[in-house]
Length: 250
Ligand code: MN
Image (cartoon, rainbow, N blue to C red; front, top):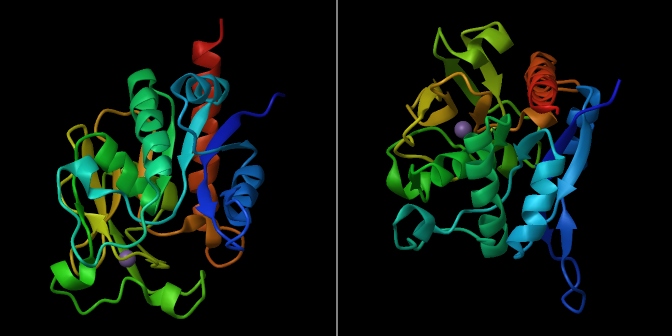
């Protein structure tokens, strides 16, 4: 059986200052897609819409991976002092990918920055910096500070009638946390389905049955050993991509 192709968006990585940057992503995203039965297909950040569209048409689902901050202009705000590193080319690559996928009903999985990108692409807004904008005793950068992707920083509380609750089989799961931004207003067509104990939105879904799930945590770093329940998210995503592929096959 042909494996479905899962497009994974990429970050820009700088190693030596005399070298051009590398475009790619962490191996854990690739491993999670392969383990779920999909074929990972890296989508580079590019400024050519026709080339991007050609890549988009070859994939059966879009996985928006983690990374730095999104330029606030994309949700109508000026940058605050605590805004982190942005990647304008990546923003310009991911915004159309989300909109095309939503228009076509192509499955979408957003992870961390990817969940925020889904929300921004569809008209939602973000908190640019949780510590300076939200009164909370939780440290949402805890796993980052400890340099441990598998450190379970706080619980994720799930809405009882959400797809994610059904996938994970639990009302509450412990998660890693490596973010300083979060969703502020939820975009039209989406709904919040998961929260940290301080009320920060940590999961979103499509409101209309389209397989579109965004999580603020990093399940790709948890699924192999720390919490195998997350494997089901990647499997359901790949299954939804296979159904989409069958449905749209000529
Ligand atoms: Mn968090």
